[in-house]
Image (cartoon, rainbow, N blue to C red; front, side):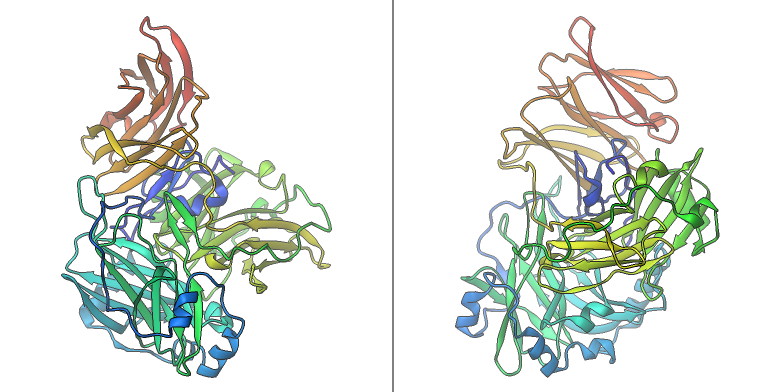
Length: 602
């Protein structure tokens, strides 16, 4: 799965920084999406990874409220209470969202801005959403307005911010079915989204926002870092909004407590996802079948092999967009499949240009496009479903599970650590659905027509594994592309005594890479491509004096690392399709080759 690449066209959250890991795992590829394409198969997400400088204690949205002290002490240390379902049913659940129209119509100007953004999105809503204004608050110098809307099976919240630069809008959706089956009083959809990033490169967020849905009759919601720190959120019209003004370095909301009209409290958790920490899962063992009852490998997608016109045709503009990636050009056959016709999530299933024996899949969300290609003979070598999962967007509380199945798969279900289970939408061999991060680990189980288990995939959730930075970042190199952005490379020590590098394309994106202490090769480089520019960066051994870069069109150039670090802006003629860098050769002071690394096929 690591052969697959990722392309993300950011539409609704274009001002939120994001990152990319050096050693991607396709099972988490959706959580590392970005504008541009990494020729190494790397991917980025849009989760802010830049931590601010220490500040005085933050100013909260409102002073801490007088919610029950006993309930507050339990915040963040307990799972959802077992009486949650009964409380929710007694309050009418999320009926305001499922059957009514909370709030009031949004101003016409805001509706027009939203419609214009939607017109640029590849994944259109099944019906034109009508924004409803839910609540409005002022914090510091900024004003925050939370809107909501329904469209088909999607129930969404959209936060608009004025008074902060580079601050949204921020949009997140949950499936209607999630609210229908929820046993909780609150369903968070975004948490700890940094807004108003400042510095060159951006280093600190001026605010952290969290928001979500609340059940009917909820009296109050409080969020906090731990049992002794909490503050109240604004609650109105079936939604809550919490703003942490000028957060301290590393500060995050990790959960909260919600109180119903009868005064009974219920705790909830928030998933925290940033470069130095992924946390917030249920801390319970996975549920559901753990082993297959029938081993199935290989297999086919009949309609794909026969080139049948399933789903919808591919928009020509989207085809052109996909063709910008050096390894993502698709062939003449391409279809767009929508497993849940009432949702906006879609998957492109296509043949690869020049190699019809490869299958390409691209997830279409309101935030962008992500996917890649793999030989069909390898796609199902380990089971009847080619899966991937992860989060797409800063602060997401729901992960997206997507995949293509062979014809033998009849249905797919997800089992949560909380004991809940439900089917994932499956149509034309495409499975596509959402999983709440705080209820992980989760198991996705595939069944054949007689009902036998033929595939099991365990999603461990937001707990971060592998190396991550542990020291302060130090800037080691800067370079400007022409045309294109400025790139800033910083270095920090890692939790495994290695090195972490952070590449910041100022005003655009952040990429994070952590390396082990020992080198695998004399050069360990990556390529970061954008629409206008391309950068080569990474680390080299101490005996490497120069690095020769070779390009697809036969050209080459020599660059010199500094203190074991290389950052190079590729000349503009070599930053486009058919001319990109393909090979790096490490040389010593006498020019002898020490080793080489392939960097892509563009």
